[in-house]
Length: 239
Ligand SMILES: Nc1ncnc2c1ncn2[C@@H]1O[C@H](COP(=O)(O)OP(=O)(O)OP(=O)(O)O)[C@@H](O)[C@H]1O
Ligand SMILES: [Mg+2]
Image (cartoon, rainbow, N blue to C red; front, side, top):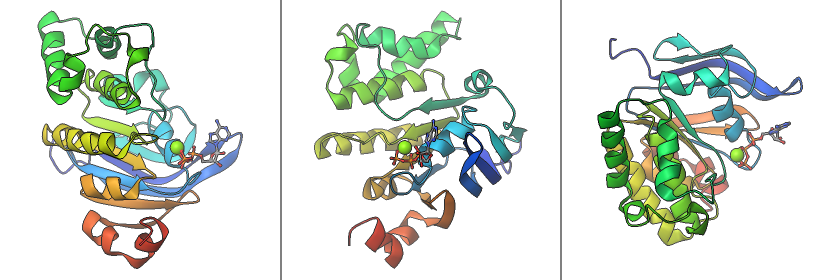
């Protein structure tokens, strides 16, 4: 594959629920290994956008992943293409151990050596999980449960990681830790599409961003440009 094929290219996307569109003519593009964020207020349609990429919401328009059209594909075909989605909220299986929760992400991997390498990669990203491998996931702190959810997604060895509001409800110190982890995941070459209400966090980790308002992209730019934009500063950064 040539490197000029975008990792993800969304064009004129309309999507919603029960015949009512939530996303209107959304276009967005990212290159392989890029770290891009979508910022927006409550109900802007951020989660709907990620769910649409994952095939969970029906759509009109185009979503190309490495050149392949995703619109019309069933949701269960999406992870196998190399896209992992960490949904809103921290979904762990509370009675299963940390290790079991993480390993669930690799249910489709048969090769034991490959499994071991992926697990090691996840534990390098999240040293705290290594210390708690046998602990029931339901007894972890909120931040640690988020690490399990992200670690499980990384077991797919995705080329695109969709992160939905990972900082929600976490203490500032834990958010700082996640910040460093996101950068480490990004440096390892994984493309990340992060949606966040925490604009300061999103713009501090992503290199580029889009602003979604009422289902429309109203602004895009580098994180530095968006951080310096007066409208973004007053509406999203409280400055
Ligand atoms: N399953 C659903 N059925 C019907 N409407 C839905 C459904 N999920 C979301 N919506 C509606 O779609 C709109 C966008 O919701 P979405 O969850 O995508 O927003 P969001 O930007 O992720 O918000 P938040 O920051 O609160 O997570 C909202 O008006 C919401 O009520
Ligand atoms: Mg949401």
